[in-house]
Image 1 (cartoon, rainbow, N blue to C red):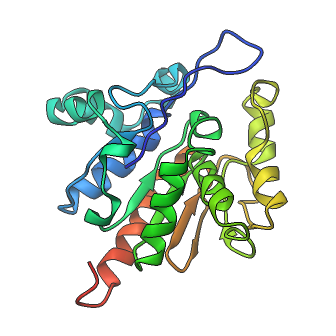
Image 2 (image 1 turned 90 degrees about the vertical axis):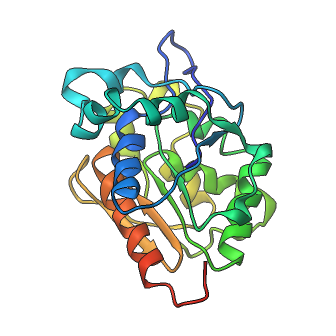
Length: 228
């Protein structure tokens, strides 16, 4: 799982970072299915956490589980730097959201190479909410990568409703469409929506984090013998 290291919003003193439930919901989906997880981020160490994701109305059951899980907290507080990770050693990559990825992961070449190399090796990549911004780095390295791919992510409408549209450098939906992605979303904002395009899995918003992980697990479980 690759997490953002970026904390600052634009034109405001508000902070961002990882949306905690978008990490914890998928994390425990994987853990409960017996998967081992390595956590990484551009800067390593403890990623910033979006303070809004800690508000009572945004707390999920997995957040509460995380609060009592010393092993998970230790892993979260000590992520590896991306350059220290060999993506070839893993079966899949997952990108949680929070607004941070639209700054750092969207232009991080190490992350972009991991995405391309993982997909090229026949292994899946998944991202949720603003996590699909990481795909923009793959597009930078391989122009045309996003063209025609069925993708979802945090929508322009959701950005406006979250009152943060003036605090981001661009709207993710627009940027993905500008790169010719086949963008889809739920009719009703902030409801579950997941897109699967071969080995690429994307989820629209925080409520889609767990379902996105489940879709990734389904791909992993259905891979033929001999594909790691």
